[in-house]
Image (cartoon, rainbow, N blue to C red; front, side):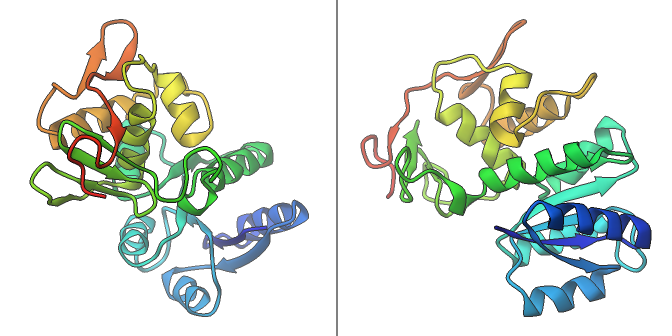
Length: 239
């Protein structure tokens, strides 16, 4: 089973979450702040960090940004903030998903399982392969290294959430995917009421791809990748 790190300055929450996840077979480490988190990461091979937003010292967003730059692991932000802007900010900083306090232990377990399922090393080899890469309109999406390369050969920086959204669309070219379907494919859950974070992320992703010609909005339906997709190399993609 995966190794998890719970970072929260609330002793009771930290203990409850750790005990519950341990009962479901995970190896769980804990930390009360960024300094303790770093010590654990230096000594243990952690697969996923449950990171509270409000921490003493550096806050969760700063630590999330640092983790995304320095470590290849999954991140779930845990926050008492519930506005759409806050959720988008957490995802844009590199979080794979978020949990809003208070949350149930069942929801916690479901989110952990969903994020771990879609981690790069968890991709089903028999279906897509470890060297999976796709080409569309001169762009190349490399799944194993989680890289997007533009038609000029330049790497484009994407957050984890934006990469997962693009991958979901690339794997279903020409098919309209609504908000619930995209959330299910990228985060393993359905949309919460009034949750439009997917729409905001897709708006930013469309700009990064050079406008509206690649990902199209279908009125009353959702989004689709409107161009042909082929294995990288078949349309000039760089393997």
